[in-house]
Image (cartoon, rainbow, N blue to C red; front, side, top):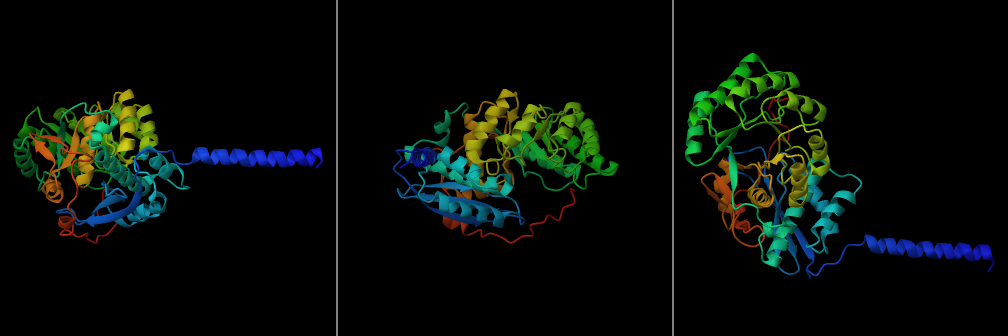
Length: 409
């Protein structure tokens, strides 16, 4: 063999050896759990008093008999998120469920297209179920797996408490809700198209004023705009809300223009909150770096699960921003959020949909504890509870129109 041919052959062999080494390094890390994922099952169930969407639960099973529950409820996107979970199934079968970070990064990075509500909700459900499995396998609550508790209970901000739309009706219902122990109420006083009329603006202000008068100065009021206003309307509404000392003005404008949001946040003299439509630490990074908001509201079912919300909360703490996790979902979302709240220093309050609460505890094997407006997760390993599949079956999924009939845009 001549020298040139020898060098070519040797170089090829060395490259093959190097590539083999690289492939070995890129393979899944090892774990001593002794478990493998054997199955994924999705269950849909209709929530009470809401015909526009369903709850989507994910049950991941292992060869040890231990299983975990996650949730991927995503309003009007059942078909998309369930298909995405199904597409991840081939990768997940055979994986070690203890390797949560490895699995999360693989689902997020080792695909051509990633991010967005559907993909991140699918990843969130998987992530949550894996945390439940690990907690059950080790015999500890999930909050013990990531640093332990920094508090024993978290203040709840009540949503879904109101009936009727007149200021008088809202004031009466607000007093009833506060009498049950809740110290913060959230509502949606400004509906309609982005260009708000003076009449609609005044009605929204009158609603907030009536609630403030009814509950007194020490109860927090959250005003959710739901992205319904343009910058002109949001500025005027913020000015009119100043006298009522609100806790936050949530999503005043569309979430996809952080520069405009920053301008509004710096002008407004009421706290600004955003985040239910942002996904992963990379999307929150821009908002945090621009010092655009006072409160962020990532959703544990949509922004990447517990793994990602821990990272987002840590980022927010660097910028002295508080976290009030968004939660308009089902019981697993609520319980997972409470475990998160136990672990993060900068938790402000936790959202709870009151009209769903009785159903939560009906379908759970161990109920969520709510006392005097504070919530705690159930006692026990993992989430501390499971879902009762027989009871879930009594509330089958409903069909719906995936395009909203509202006129907020």
